[in-house]
Image (cartoon, rainbow, N blue to C red):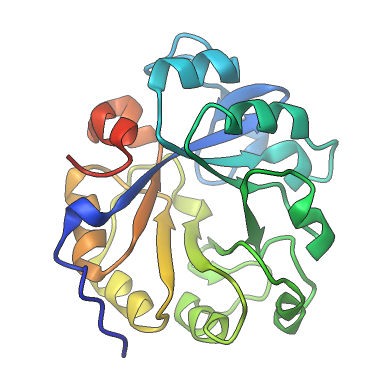
Length: 238
């Protein structure tokens, strides 16, 4: 069991805007059904062109998922670089399949997703930088089918800067979070821990802070107005 002295201080939470890129545009989807992702033009930006989109929202931090690269298509590296230059920090998931791919885009914090990074859990030991994204679908870690707490325990022995719990099945659903599962996961890992997928609003931000998480990756809740835009612009709860 790890003790996290910052767990009662929601203002210490890092709030990160999720930006999914496909076909050169910002897209929005639900539950990881990537074939159904469509340009995000219904929210706080009337344009899905990434530069215009980021100019409208003005986030401090972004998490970019290059869906083209993740799905094995041509990476959108030049577009990602332009987006990264507009924010203070950019986390990037480009579907790394080897450690060398993690350093292909300079000036970003690379994300190593379990969905694509290695054939075995032991293969994750080859990575020496970035954050490990524990990609979850149906309550199990892709692609190995183990439970998230077990993956977090194993991640404690790896060289990552931190971990992300990415509940792919909850993306875009605003289904909300459960305190018990958050506390169980937090207790299994002593490093920096971020959460993304299904965050419904301010109450969930407080749940994550109370459980000791260090940050949240959000998008739909911002566009729906259940998390203030000012929080994303500041990069933390005001």
